[in-house]
Length: 358
Ligand SMILES: *Cc1c(COP(=O)(O)O)cnc(C)c1O
Image (cartoon, rainbow, N blue to C red; front, side, top):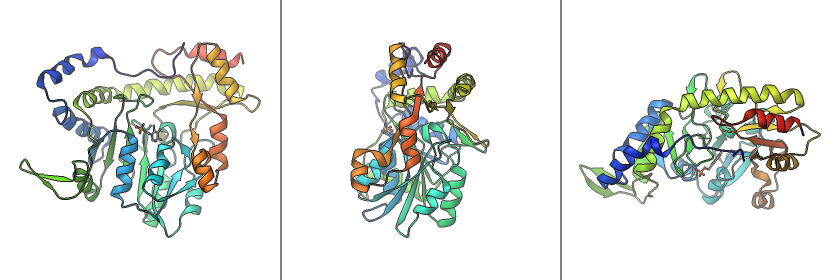
């Protein structure tokens, strides 16, 4: 079976440091959990980075930082993993779905402008499947209107716009280190920002609501624990060091696959000319005459794992029933996109051959 994903980290790469961590007895709040945020800042260029247990907790903390409450509206990109909208619903705010481009799969500027109201408290842009295309235009609109912008960059570590890395492009950015993403620690996340005020708030909230003055904890507010343990931080540091190579390799696989499949009517997810997409997922819209679910089955029968692109949030049963505002492009993408295996050493030829034989 050709698997859909393969982590970019092996036990051999970490075993020496793992032993050192176990021997030290310091399984959390040690040198690696301090080092990882520093490395995230160096890599992305952001001023501050905080560890989190997942992109979901990172997003929830971001909404909290912006003071999003019941009665507020938050505009979200409609083509994403449901965690993007669940965090909005969970804090009692109303999610407003903005439709996306059928080419880049990202929020359309016109759709965003149409959805802004006096109650709009924040916007969550999603770098769909890692693609940051069009984010620059969304940044301009949000700045002009004075609306804080969160980048759900769960998939987008290593991507960039105009040479600026994701993590350093909006007010607050959230990353995931789930195994479906480029870098993984099993589970994990990060929040980056350049805003002193947000950083100050997060540093207290993420430490149980306490400030630390010369080792003396003062619980000045209520807070949370979304820390990442030492082993996880070490795994992430190791992968971050080779991230640019990983992205270059994936771009090459994407290029080869697109060249072979596009003449047959498959359309690759598009990237803007001023952007670099990390190809977190290798996604195509299938030709009109091909039924996507049948294609996934056909690949499986031939020993190739594949899956859908991602979800139309407004078409999830819960959100459709509650808001009934299904967005057409996101729905089209949910029904017509396929994710193919993409990693070092994957048998691209077999995948292409099997697709073309369909
Ligand atoms: C995976 C993903 C999430 C959730 O990430 P977790 O780390 O699993 O919480 C959120 N948003 C997007 C766009 C994702 O792809």
